[in-house]
Image (cartoon, rainbow, N blue to C red; front, side, top):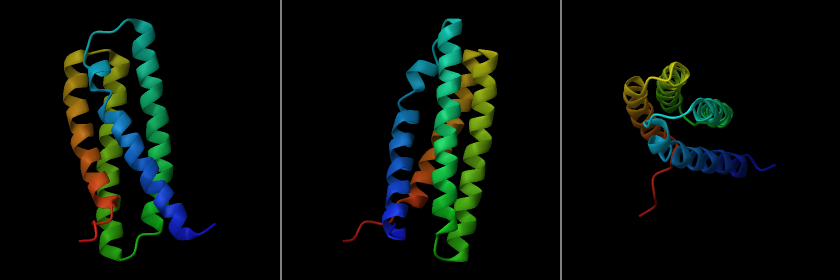
Amino acid sequence: MDQGMELKGCVCRIKSCAVELLSMEEDLVTDLDDDLWDLNRRDLQLKATFLYIDLSRVISRSEGEEHRKALTLLSNEFFYFMDELGDAVASRSVSVVKVCYGDVARALREVVAAVTPPAAV
């Protein structure tokens, strides 16, 4: 498989997963019944797994040591906040979920900006 095409596919999946995660806010910051809390927790875990795989591929194929280090730091911060959000969802605390979701959303936007190549003018 063409390495450039694989990288584009990873970036596309990262963006798609980011859109899905960013659209989950309403589902996460309302008081839910037990089944929905569990469903949202599993959905977050699944999305984090896919993001981990794709971000690992993008980082390993990044050109330039500085970009690789910066992307690694952003990704680590994002996954830290995802773990915190997962714990908050497991605890079923709406107020903690709101704070953690805000951290995840900010970190995710930074990651997406870092993996998206600048548009040609």
